Image 1 (cartoon, rainbow, N blue to C red):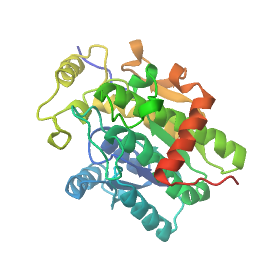
Image 2: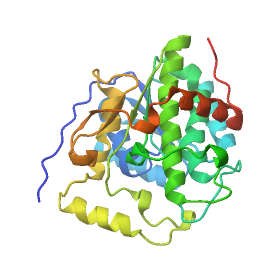
Image 3: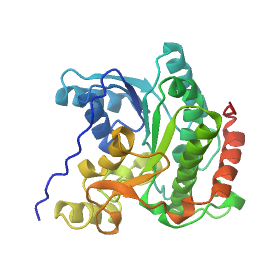
Image 4: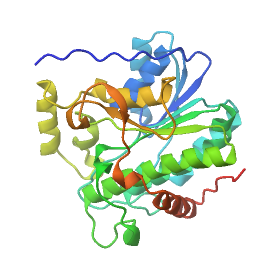
Length: 314
C-alpha cells in the first residue's frame, strides 16, 4: 500500500539555537535535519561520537549550509550531564528549542546507570530531568519551548513508587512504561512551575506512535543480540502502510510541538491515525496516568533528591 507523504511546514528558525537529544540516528536525526533546514543552529549531544560524526555529515548532506555541531552527552551519567551543562553555560548562548528525544527501551535484564538507577528510569526520565535543570538559565534566556518525547506506552500503567529502580522484581516493559509516565509528569509539572515562578519557558509533550525505529532493534550493549519479534512485525506493517507510521512520520509530532505557532503548552501531540499509531501529527487528550498533579509533584520532588538537581522557585 503506497503512502501519501505527510507534510509539516516548519517556520523560519533563523537566529534560534536548538538542542536535540538522541539525534545520532532515527527520529532524532530527522528532527535535527528539519530544524537545520529551517535555519536553526542545531546542537546534537550524543553518547557515541563516531555515530555523531556520521549524523552531522548526513545533516550537512541534506542541508549543505546547516549550522550543526556535536557535544558529548551520556544521559545515563549525571557527571556527563553536568559537563554538558557547564559547556553550554560557558558558551553563554540562549537556547530557544529543546527536544528531549533520547531514550532506551526494554533491556531484557535489569541494568543500571553510572549512578545506580535502573537504566530506563535513569536515562529516559532522570537524565532529562537533570539536563533541563542544568540548562535552565539558558532556556530562560531564550524563552525556550521544551518538548519531551514520551511513548504510547504511557497510555496505561503506573509508577512503581515502592521500588522505582526495580530492584526486587524487574519487568522491562513495565519499567519502560514507568520511565515514560514519570517523564510525561515532569514535562507537565515543568510547565506549571514555569508559569508559577515566571521562568518564561513553555513545556509540552509528544509521542511518535509506533514506527520501525531502533528502540526494539538489536542492541548488544543492552543485552539484546538480535531484533525482537515486535520490531520485525512493526517493520513489516510499516513497509505495507498498515496502521503504523514510518521513521519519517514518527518525528513529526515532536517537530510540531516544538516549532508550530499553534502548539500549546501542557499539551500532548502525537499521530492522529487509528489508535494514534501513525498518521499526521495533532493534539491529543492527555493519557490518564499523566493527569494527576499530585503524582507530578511527587515525582518532581523525588527526582530533585535523586539527581541532586535543585530548580529555582523564582
